[in-house]
Length: 214
Image (cartoon, rainbow, N blue to C red; front, side, top):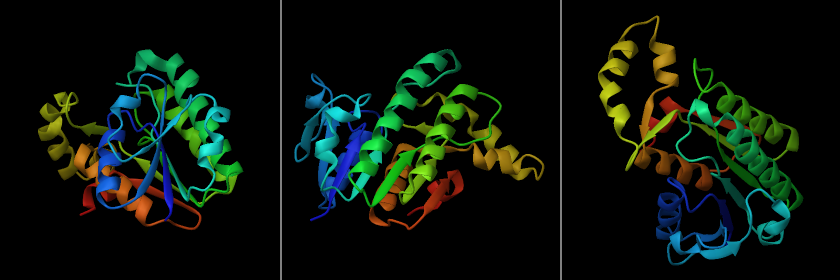
């Protein structure tokens, strides 16, 4: 059976993804730092390691077919620019190197929608990781949500009427669609679809496609 390696499985989206993958019968290895392994759902093979140091988990990546990378700073904001460079970028680089060395067949990366008028460093870091994926030569799916609605992430619901209006106006429609809101359920479905439908080359999945997945 093909094994899926997930980095970031103890986070906001990771827990939902792991449970869904397990429910669908996939074998999963999930990276966890010491002390957080209890956040992983039963059924996962736990890999203890440091997301910022690929050498701590590289051996466990061997034998896997897909690498899903969800690691990132929680609750991103413009004030966390340095953390994006020290955590998000370093973790992505480590993951891509470990996956390439293990001859992973398909890499799934959680990026961010861009361009956008805010979150410049966050977008810059995610774009650098996307470029690293292109240069690695691996087959990859890159998902680009903007804001994912779910438990603890509900305040943007108040913006839904504004989005609805902007999506109706031709001049603002492209930006409103690209930077639209998606739900945690939609995001989980998109990640599962990426895992179960690997590609040759690099596939980009933007907000409209994330929303349209059934």
